[in-house]
Image (tube, rainbow, N blue to C red; front, side, top):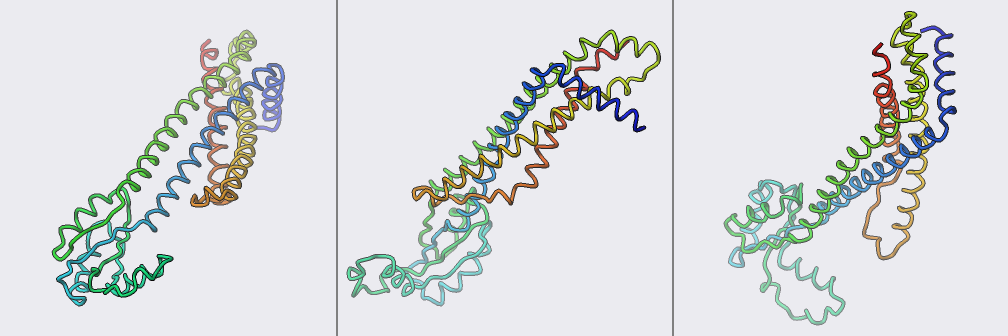
Length: 295
């Protein structure tokens, strides 16, 4: 493609943007709003997944060994416990270690003075690969001979898994709906240009201009609108994310929430925004002009 053609396509594309300034502005605003909403829910989904992953590392199942088992017999169960599906690792805690841990945990340790460690049970602290499978893991561990009780916080795991599923479902639904809206607005914006130039397009077709030559200025228009909207949306998303994450980090009541640093998602996010913005611009342009090329 020659330099003169490129200049012509770019000039016509830019000119069309300013000719329909209000609709062009509306298209960019819609793209920005849609991308920010999509980006916000995607980042929320990522952070919820990160919290669940942290919970998987911290949330534990406590497996109590039958009190009739000696410490040696309890230790011998380690291989069978770690071989259970979804168990990443298991740490043995003796009765004496459990008593010492209780004394360190409770402020008034005098209440535990004189308590014989033999009244407690040897136990394993079990860590899982996926907390969504906690209930099944609890059931499998109970089936091991020598296991007396399995203590698992099913309500916590089920709550976080439900939140994760809801956020993911809403994110996917919003992305699809907002993409359709963006394409519709972009297509209608460029249709205004093609409608005003339909006679010119028809004449160009009659004198032998190729469809691609006629189509390129409109594609350039869509690229500029989509690319500009994507960059503004990215910068706005960056500022919004930093503002919210700073508020969460500085809040004493929300310090249990771990926020993913924006630097960790910056590159994938800018790529996604540019691909979506440019994609909406190109598809919207091609959709708007295709009927006018049928001469």
